[in-house]
Length: 415
Image (cartoon, helix red, strand yellow):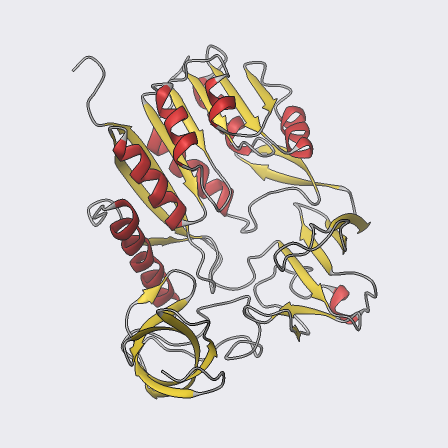
């Protein structure tokens, strides 16, 4: 295998890989090829080779096209261009099939499970593949011009608009202005208002090639935005977390309720509760005779959650980092545990602490199928089984896929 970047090789493309590429082989090494589809034969330009068993490449010429290939709707998509999307060259149905294949593969490889009987496909959300992002952070270059990062690069692709954004976000006026001194300019849309946030270099030294977290401040619009779920209004800091697809939170909440089936009077533990969206839905389900305790590490999110849940007297929010010690020290015996962790997942120790509480069911909302599969494997090792799995295309055109799973003890209590 030649090691020089920009070398062009000819390969037959195989299955999709987690991360938005497809797998090919060349001279005994794995090649992760972007902008290709399974079954195609392409010429691919080598983009990264650090030695070892694999290299990365971009399909620069398609010699045999898949029937699922379509023209990208964005002029900035393609080899060497904007890195925000992975599958613009695939039809809508093909994108969901690719994501389903990745979820199946991750569970087979990382959890040792065949989930074919549980997961029949990835479910579409309303609205189509474009115009769904309610939040975009545009990168700002040294010249002050905004754009989007190219794939695995600090180079910036200048854009006039992003077709994934909702009105006012994808076509925000910030794209026509200069932002000297900023690392990024973020645009976020609530129910009835839009805010613009400045990202400035954070204090401290760069570590392992990563700069310190940005300092973020609101430049325009409200500092707090309104969101809506199940007829309830939620107020969240403009730089706080809320699902970027406008239909995602509703879909995940409905899937979670169907999975864990909360009963009146039950006690629920909601880990990584954010601003309290799922906490409120669970509180409505168990009613005033029940109890819901949310745990959140972010000071701002915990404060938002407490305010958003103020009228639900049977809920409470505890600000704490979710780790094995904090879970074990909560002092409650939940019937249900729900978790919505960050991309890295909960981890084996947190999963063990959750299962030690002996709930009747665990509901898991996951933004990364690999992390979910690893945590499901940890639960299986502790005597639990995966009882349900659904996947949602909450991030069309990208490789990201959201899953909702639930776990139950392999042997029922008292059996």
